[in-house]
Image 1 (tube, chains in turn red, purple):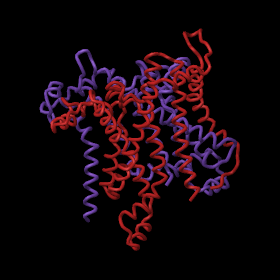
Image 2 (cartoon, chains in turn orange, brown):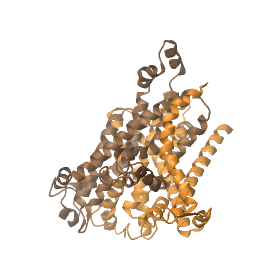
Image 3 (tube, rainbow over the protein chains, first blue to last red):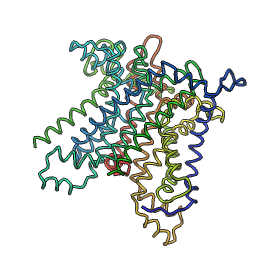
Image 4 (cartoon, rainbow over the protein chains, first blue to last red):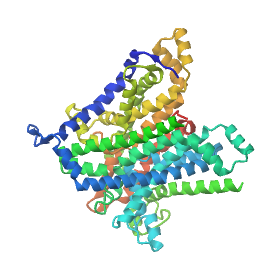
Amino acid sequence: MNKTENNKAWFLVLPVFVLVAFSAVIPLMTVVNYSVQDIFDQNTAYFVGAEWFREVLRNEDLHDSLIRQFLYSFAVLAIEVPLGICVALVMPTKGKMASLCLILVAIPLLIPWNVVGTIWQVFGRADIGLFGAALNGMGIDYNYSANTGDAWATVLLMDVWHWTPLVALLCYSGLRAIPDAFYQAAEIDRASKWAVFRYIQLPRLKSVLVIGILLRFMDSFMIYTEPFVLTGGGPGNSTTFLSQTLTKMAIGQFDLGPAAAFSLVYFLIVLLVSWLFFTTISHMDKAK
Amino acid sequence: MIMSKRKSMGMALYIFFVLVPIYWLINMSFKTNEEILGGLTFWPQDFTFANYHVIFTDPTWYNGYLNSMTYVFMNVVLTLLVALPAAYAFSRYKFVGDKHLFFWLLTNRMAPPAVFLLPFFQLYSSVGLFDTHIAVALAHCLFNVPLAVWILEGFMSGVPREIDETAYIDGYSFPRFFGRIFIPMISSGIGVTAFFAFMFSWVELLLARTLTSVDAKPIGAIMTRTVGATGIDWGVLAAAGTLTIIPGLLVIWFVRNHVAKGFALGRV
């Protein structure tokens, strides 16, 4: 669609601009301000330049939690995207069943994140939870608050439970937008189920999958509440992800300078990865 | 036919996976603490409403729900009010800095809330908004407004330009055209946007908890009260958790017919 050139349109975006400036630019500037100063109290602060950034980049704890974070986000995407597509493919398309399935599938998305943590905390416990008790009953030594592997598995399972619906619903709406004529053509060509998926459905899902992957990457990279409630970051530091490390630093230890420097690095990583992903996708589109 | 049987099996399995953890929570909310800790029971043997009674009779508990709903409602209204004109501008006009502004807006959706904790706390304290509903509503605009502008822009771009032009030729002023003709045309888009704004504001806790202390404390933060000196009050915790699911269910129920179209965010 060709748009008309009109700078008066700025008046329409002005409210958004003011609101976001208030709720994003001012806080971000505060963070930048902290990241280059050593603050003792309200009135004494020294300019330290890039000192905090150097310290943060060398910090072993942060390296570890960054690696954990990438592993986690990668695992989340690797499980949720294929599973979400599968769920979308098997969802009924018409009638009351379709509405019912939609509602049931969407439920986890609308549960407050701390309650999601609570649900799995309860569900996974060996003494009072069905899941933990069932696993232990089958002779598997399962305890998410003591074994690192179990903690990881539980946090991942929780995320799959929580967020696969988003991918599934995105794909579902993508599938509904494919005209019937496409399927009829495939039938005339005697295309196999797989061919239909590979050459008709998957290409049409691309735009929703890009949205889904971006949202899932960003949100899994910022995850805080659910693992905090479930495992508290433990055992040890094994499920402490970036947001939790940051919160500990900023509020627990009140290391404002390093925490601020770390915040900026954190934000830049999210931006960079999202940008890289998006640019690659749009270049692939152009190349075709 | 065999294929569709396999499909419904798959669907049933997935829904089972979704519902069992929730069932376990609801099941627990009707049990007494003795029964919960006494061993596994698949349904409440000693069915009780006592846990819910605690929540509905204690103002600190039920005010938590009211507080959460208040700021979520404020946030949805605020988000829609500012995002609608902006999305219209982005979908219809070229103006200085439009692309950069759009990208910059989206970057805010990518900002980890943990980054903004401390500055938010200081900012809202210094303007005297700490522990008010509007503070949380404003803070949630950080991620909801960019998303709303993005979703609405998609829906609005699907409406042909000719409609705008015809309306202007017919003598409609911009506000009248926007309110009378345009908004009704994208009502499902607005519904979906409201749904997303509700969803992300209702589920968020980190910012909401940091910006409040007493008067606007969200239910999620009040749930930590169940951890006492004598251990965790599992029954009340489960009841409180169960109650937080209900508003979400109601909202999905209202948008269920728009989900198929709406979740594609107007971009298929």
